[in-house]
Amino acid sequence: MRLTPTDFPTVSDNELRDLWRRHQDADVRRLILEVHRARAVIRQAHADALDAQLAMWNKRDGDLKAQLQAVIDAMLAEKIRLGAMGGSLPKG
Image (cartoon, rainbow, N blue to C red):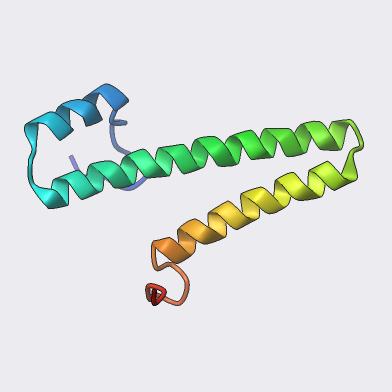
């Protein structure tokens, strides 16, 4: 079976913990940490988006703009961290 980025079994948090315990290889551990970080970023972006939606419903424009900016900033920071901006990592 050929897997694509949108068609594969999801790895649970428990499975990630088990992989961490079983594999000492630095590259495997980096991948596990990357998955863990991505999930945390997605959780925070979702929370910020929900806050923006609530601000929109309550007609609090200042809060809406702040929450949307938080989502935009977080996604941009991840793109930069991953080297997705122009295909190169930032110098630091």
